[in-house]
Image 1 (cartoon, rainbow, N blue to C red):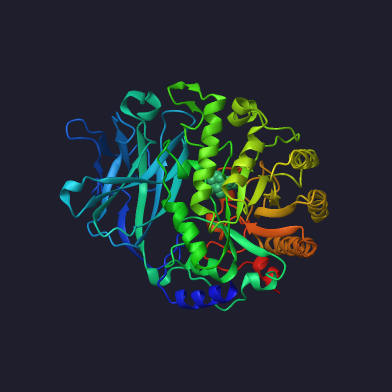
Image 2: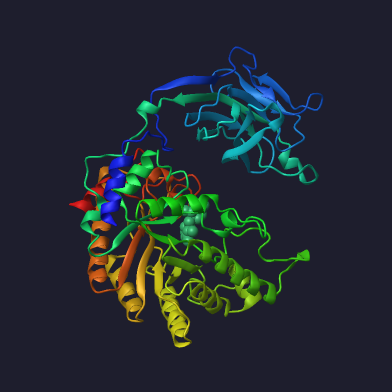
Length: 538
Ligand code: XIL
């Protein structure tokens, strides 16, 4: 495995670069810069059809900077808003960075605004394509800065690109007053970033896995963009990690958005990358109560009703079998169920968010594992959950649940501890106790989603990652990995997966506090190794 990894790395390290990290200090070309101070619309135009279009005017009653801003009013549809041509010559891989300020004095306390992209094609009959790049929450009465990056996709048939601002899409018959609000935009800037100044993965640092591979594999969760072989993030993944899982692309809302219509593209891309680079692969997750498509729990004949137990049972079996049949050759470790426990250690019911329990009763868990074993007799079948270390009641609940499953002959091979933890809690001693408790059941223990938030709790405001904080984080990563090694050498810990490659891509930037930046991983936004990385390779 390692030999294959190395030679591929050497080959691929020479390929071109591209990455999604934010980067103020790139060289750039200004594409659009509108402060509306000269009183004209500066190329911004309404999206609505001629005769029924929204109104765009330069206003002087509200402004972010200077004396004027752009005012959008008389909106009837969610998608109505200002649009501007970005380029009439789309070039795959070009990266554009948007900054703007939005203000509204109508509607609810907070409104969502969407930054989107419209594309035309060389074939004029092809129609236009629309994609939502990023959604922002804008509090009423507060000028709010919005920022996003857009990378032109690899599509030789595309031609023009427009950028626009709108509200989240609703069909016309669903539109309410809150979707028709007027708003202001100001100080809009679109820069094209020079690829030569894009952040690069560091070549002259040790490979992370080298120090740990004799005891356990170090894995990482990825997006389908990060595994583009031409991206710098892919170079980083190949250099440092020996195991792989998808952060979102393997969840059922990605795989089967519409019943019977499988969308394999993103999962395929990730699994292919893992196979080509010799990584061990995990799947996350076959069953969960979140990130499910709308159809999943609905009666096939009457979408106002919940599906019956028999229908859910057959959906469960067919989903697990279909997915495992496709990927069993490459994926060895499967999160069969995710987050089935409450904080008090009991099973999560419908009231706590899980229709699975309400419709099928407690046995859905056993069934999921039996269907998975029937689909692949060699797969490592994992039950995955969070707060297992920090919450002793939930830890005990997991122990009891798995013990019961083993007693009933249910094929569960490992307990996955997510470990989304904080710099301040839980202590390493509790991690050891948890691993030892689970290990006493004779199952493997996996660390499936490790990240270390620099925040203490959900109510703390944004903390700046000072050197002292990053050093403390490094110490905790080192202490944890030393413990994982100790427990791997005893045959208990099998794999340690970090939930994301770089701080810029971490889900913790939006969770549990929307927009509160975090720095929980080993590499920063610019792909540079943090003190935590060095602590793990020294
Ligand atoms: C998170 C992803 O990282 C986010 O991108 C997504 O918006 C929400 O889900 N526990 C899990 C993971 O089991 O699936 C979650 O991943 C993080 C918490």
